[in-house]
Image 1 (cartoon, rainbow, N blue to C red):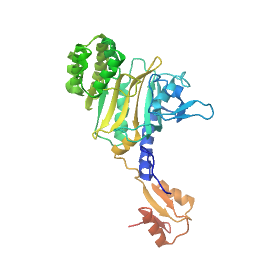
Image 2: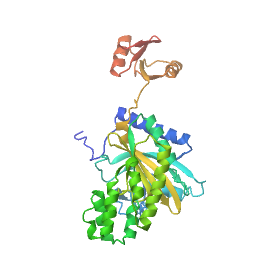
Image 3: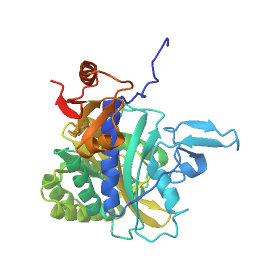
Length: 376
C-alpha cells in the first residue's frame, strides 16, 4: 500500500484506544439505563429537512452533504445526535409518556474541526429529557454527570454556566438591527465591549457589567443580583439566578463558573446552558435547555475522544492466559470464569513454544498440561 494517510481530523482507533472508547461508552449507557433512560439509535444519514429542523434558519455548514441516488434529495450526515432525538421526540415517540428520558451513543461527522476538538469523526454520548414543563431538571443531569465522571475516574472538573438567549433579550430591549446584533455578538465572542457605545451607550454599560462578572459563581453572583437591567433582559437574568442558586445549594462543593455573554454555537439552546471542563480545560460535556415545538427539554452530551484523554480507567484489568489449540471448551470456560482472557494457539505447540507465544501476546500466564504457569 503506497499511502496510509487519512484525511485531516480522521484516525484509526487501535486496540488499546478502541477498548477504552468502548469501556467509556458502555459505562455511560449502563448508568443511563439504570436511571430510567431508554436507549435509541438514530440513522447516520437523514434528509436535510428532518436533520436540521431545530435550526431551520442556520446554514448548518458543519455537516457533510450528499445526494441520495434513490430519492434524488439532499441528505446530511449528522453532526449532532441531539437534533435527531428532538425529531424522534415529536415524531415516533410523540405519544410516549412525559417526561421522556432517552440516551444514545454513536458516531457523528463534522465538516470542520476546531481548537477544542481536532477530530471530525467523533463518538458522541448523551442523554435528553423531553417534556419537563417548568422543572428544568438541571440537578438531575448534574448528578448524573458527577456519577459518570466518578466512574471514569475523572476527579477534578468544573462547570461553566451560560445564557444562550441573553443576547436575543438584549437585542429586543435595545431594538438592534441585524447588522448591529452581529457586531455585538462578535464583540462578546472576543470579550470586548469597546465600540458598542456607538450603537447605544446604555448597551455598552450593560455589556461592560456583564463581562466584568465572568468567573467563579461564588464571587460574582452577588454582583449580578445588584445590576439593574432592561425589562426582558432582567427576566432572563432572574431565571438564571434562580437556577444557579438551586444548583449551589444542591452541590456546595462543586467548582461553578458563569459567563452570561458566552455565545452558544448550537443555536438551539434556550434559558441556561453549561459546559463541563477537566482541570486540563478539556471539554467533557456540554448541555442545556431547549425546546421541541412547545415542549421544554434538557440534555447533555460529550465526546468520547475527550473523555478518553482525561479518564484514568484501565482498559483491561483481566489477566491473559495463552493456551494450546486443543483446549476443551469446558476448560476454557473454567478459565474465563476465573477471570482470565483466553488466547488460543492456532496449531498444536510444545511447552517452549506456548511460553514463547504467551510472551509475544503479552500474556502473564500460559497453560501447560492443565497447569496455570507464569510467563516470567
